[in-house]
Image 1: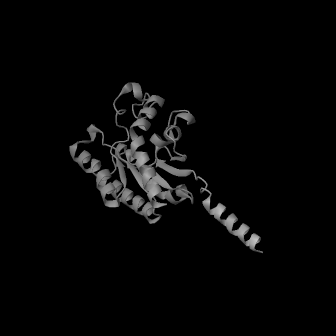
Image 2: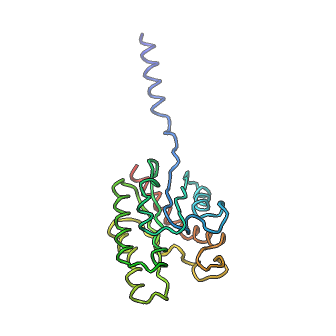
Image 3: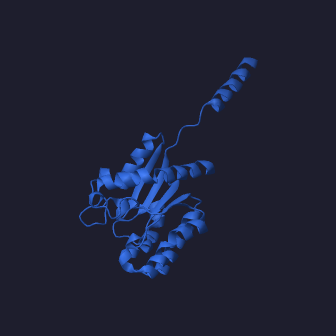
Length: 210
């Protein structure tokens, strides 16, 4: 009997000493055509290229493409619960460009994005908010109101902020498709390289909450 008890104790100790099975983190990329990969092969879309870059850096991460071309903040909010499902560990929010392109009131965009971030916060999911900048032709008053949305809400909701999703790409013809709005595959790779430290900070926040 003593031998059996000793064997049972030893077995439990060995089980407890085993390392926990690694779990693939799931990042939801919630956005519009810039996330969806408009005009590009699926393999060149932002979530796919971001996942590849993260894996090259040793992160066991899956980036889910929840981009829908044409989505405004309101449209993203309307499908948020469905997009999140039950398995997301963190969220990259890239919405608001279509609000600006349609000239929607910045106050409307701000309110919708505020609600969206609050809803994600209710699930206690870390967020990286990707900002946008207003086109110069919309005027300084519009630009001032619109551009302040992203840093203001990032502070209010304690989210990580990447100030301008198209930094280094916007306005560069060689990095954009003929419409001048959507990045080429090379443009996407530049975006990924620039945003990567912010996404790794998001992964760090996820790890700190586990």
